[in-house]
Image 1 (cartoon, helix red, strand yellow):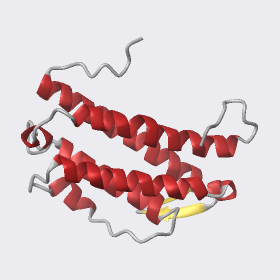
Image 2: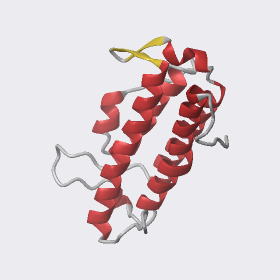
Image 3: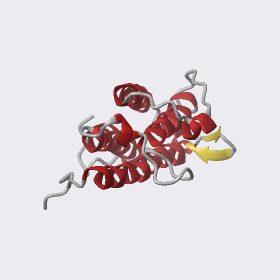
Image 4: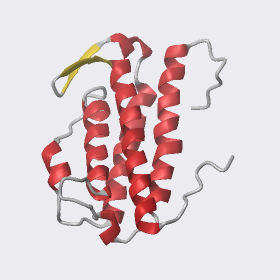
Length: 167
């Protein structure tokens, strides 16, 4: 998966870059952000209308699995999107992270074999008609967006700096 920015095949470089972001940057940051949280912290929400870290992780599992594994990889996945946000049973953090690990690894396997020719192909995902490139970009930026929320909630709950960017 090692790619250099000077790779003339920008389509493959795009896929490889998204894989790197998901597997080597975002997932480790997610794990670091929640590592010291209690189950109470993972399921904390300031108001009922807010999402907890637990709900956001379930949502990321659903999103990654539906958009990449099911839609681009043509593998089975049954999603209950509403339940991702409605879950209140306080699943243990270890189970949430295990589910997320499996989803990201499955997506990475799909992307590792995804033909660059299919980046322009149209896929119907949820109610959207998107290209393969749009689907991959959506999952990458969507993961980043919710990772930011999770990092923020973690900082609120622990009061600690996660030191991701010590420049």
